[in-house]
Image 1 (tube, helix red, strand yellow):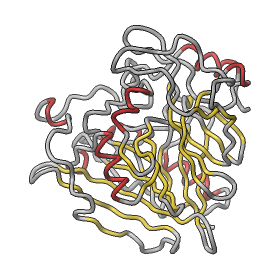
Image 2 (cartoon, rainbow, N blue to C red):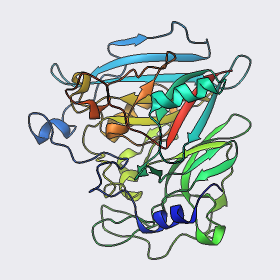
Image 3 (cartoon, rainbow, N blue to C red):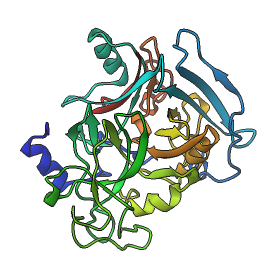
Image 4 (cartoon, rainbow, N blue to C red):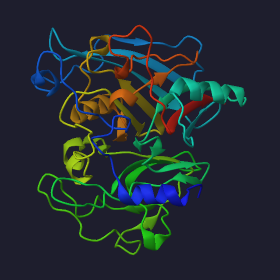
Length: 351
């Protein structure tokens, strides 16, 4: 593991802290026009309305789309998604990258990959972070490069959060599961059948750290993987609200019930990967999605499984020319785009 002792202390002492302005996650936000404009009230968006394919220059294995989903005549969500075939002849490649502090902007990551001789087509932000360090599981080429956060601090105490992760195995298949890196398992990632006995909505939490010997726990060994949370699509069904609370993410500032900028990754039943980024907080006139709306959008695109990733000001997607496609919310009213430095990224490259 490429993890320092100081890094492990960070995981043992902190989670997604709301008071820190440079953490991953969705920070406190005053919605334009009042709080109700961010609550996700009203009808669900019409999936696919006002959609355009941005295919010029991309290999046949990668399709990139922009979309505008209207909630009503005055409110909308604007976003981008890529669908990539990662198996068979001419397939694209999917990977997860980790950067030691300082992190990189998605545009900077794209440039570094090009300089290394790779052919990136899509780069997005990925897992949660704090003080520039990844707090989410990251596995690249079978090596664990960062572990999942050990503790969370919801109102009323301490929790051991078992959160969602998305992985690709050497045969090209994808899997979502719940991950913890238990001490008695050498802090390697273990897969669990559920988020176990945590439920932030009722204030009930596990009193002991998850064990590697827990019934159903298995060492998880994908080739590429990213952690985040919550699980939002499982077996083709929208499970966002249920697992938002069970993965103890309200305390982390994910703001799952309000419309926000979001980033997500999922996979279709036929083994294609989907990455999606939407704007919010008024950028490009977009309110963003609630987690449940995000899940519905991914299901409409064919996702059988999907997880939420870091959002808010971190959400960014870079296309084949190395330029950011969306307007990250840290930009505000500025002329120049403002992108966050992130420690983990999702990358789709042309083979």
